[in-house]
Length: 486
Ligand code: SF4
Ligand code: FES
Image 1 (cartoon, rainbow, N blue to C red):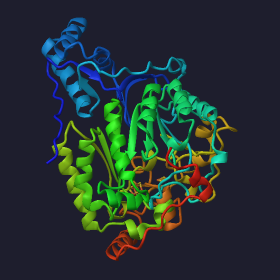
Image 2: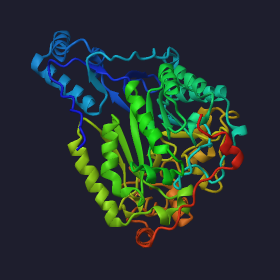
Image 3: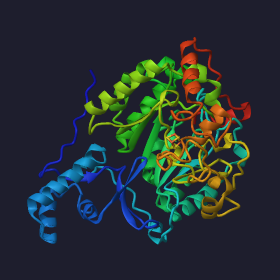
Image 4: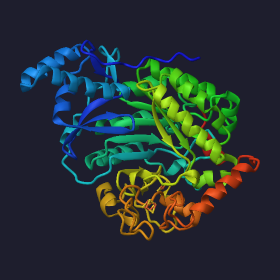
């Protein structure tokens, strides 16, 4: 039995404060206030803002409610109940702590106060700082043709992209790769992101990090670490990543994030070669002190498509994971938050992939190509603009690739007349391309797609056959040299 931390239950005597990885932010592009948190920006109204502006780890909930009751002339019991409900919701998301934080947060960016309103911009920027990576995961989501180190944007060029993204509404920045920590100038890049006022999330395998470097990044203002794991059985984890000692290193990195007061998400891609360990993977996230876990069944495009037969689970095994996650969510309420991405081959409805094409996310490749989805290069015929040559706002609003599948005009039947067309936006374009060869087709994960039955059968038949060996994601020998652990 692992020891599970207690849920933080708010009452009148609680003295809540934001954890280091959550903060109030005024979103000037959209003229409202938000709580910035890992992978999320929670919009808040004026009353919630009044409450959250008071929490400092010193004032009690009872004192805050009394102040607000006097200020607004509202009955104290009603105010007190509303304050507790609001704070309990945030505590259950693991965004609050009791008492003042022992860690000092870097000061907020003054630059973010100068942005003007901008309608309809992205909320997030995925910055693929490099495609270099010391791991060789068989489900790598980077493109088949990796970009080389000598074409990567400089730190200053990334800084320009961050500032422009923030000006048009981006709140969240995901520093990704490849492995972003192989960039020796990561600190300089991060400083530009903090200066732009973005909430920063480092998506890392952890194997090249040292404690000193992580501490340095925390001091610059890194908000959150998303640590990917392959398994919790060390030999199997290292076999999947083809990196000896990788799991042990990840365990250390998880521990350091807690010691440094940083936010932590454990990211566990799920497939037939680690799925039996899902309960232990959840336990590992709890033991690591993570606030979130992402359990994502693999989606099959780019490199993962080459390994589908080696990775895909049977429908029954997949359904088993649904039950495990549902139970764990109940058991770990207020301790661990779950993002669970179900298996598309066994779904009946598709996901609104990337939140809808050209609606919320812009991805930028190491060489500066702006993409509406990180896998958009798997779709032939799309033309991608370079952030060094065209203003990001213009790319976002008018770029050909961003408008190719934006909204609903591009849809054919059955999506065109479906009542869910503005909910899931027809699902995933990259999956329609990978599975059917037609990016305008309805995502075959949808039960209304003519390809749905065959898509589900394909999953079952591959999953029931013995798994073939992995085709590992190898980099060129030259690129691998600069992706070695530091
Ligand atoms: Fe979504 Fe299209 Fe399926 Fe309707 S038909 S549920 S819009 S994918
Ligand atoms: Fe590209 Fe879904 S991965 S739209």
